[in-house]
Length: 263
Image (cartoon, rainbow, N blue to C red; front, side):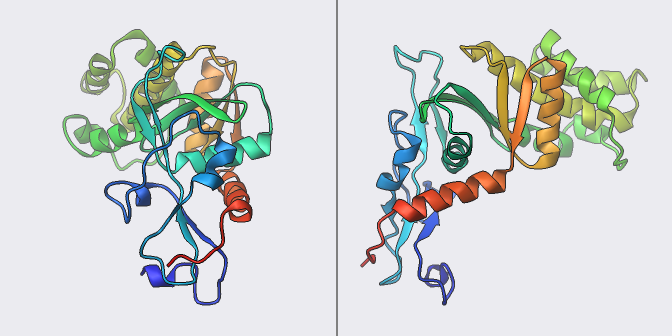
């Protein structure tokens, strides 16, 4: 498969990012530390060892964060792939002021970028938890085939996440349905609100400075969920097209990366 990278008629560099550079991917690539600026990623690309002769193929390394005296709120955390979206967003927004980016998904990231450098970031397993809880276990039995949505149930879930610990609040989803307090058709939206709300409340408690504005990099439907929470918590939310930011990053790296063939 690697011999077909880019197609037979394509002679430009092939740039790969994400889990392909993980220990479970094609070729493990070491993480960068947070002192490495996003605009410096082109100088950190790692050649693909198995690339065909004459085909420049590169893997973009991810970032690893560790607590420090300067950023004690930074836990041990990693990202692969999100650095491309962050690079593209920083190119499109072009601001030196600190900016909070949120990348919702299976493993949501909250990232603070200042002067083109990732200062700290936190990962939340929001999407993975939603998939697991809605497909397996006690709460899965509540989920119906009804595809209608309930903004109120979602908002109630966000509020509940602020009032109780997540484990207790999750069981409250079942309690609401079995007591008739909430119809089963609303359980999916309530669960979504609980998990996304818990992410927001924890992220805001860890965020210094507390964001008054965040930029969402995500698919439209999921980005709208985060926009709704922002409105509920009176925080300005703007959205960037994830395809546009990724394309901007690819163009930046393609223009700057080495083009010599890989032996």
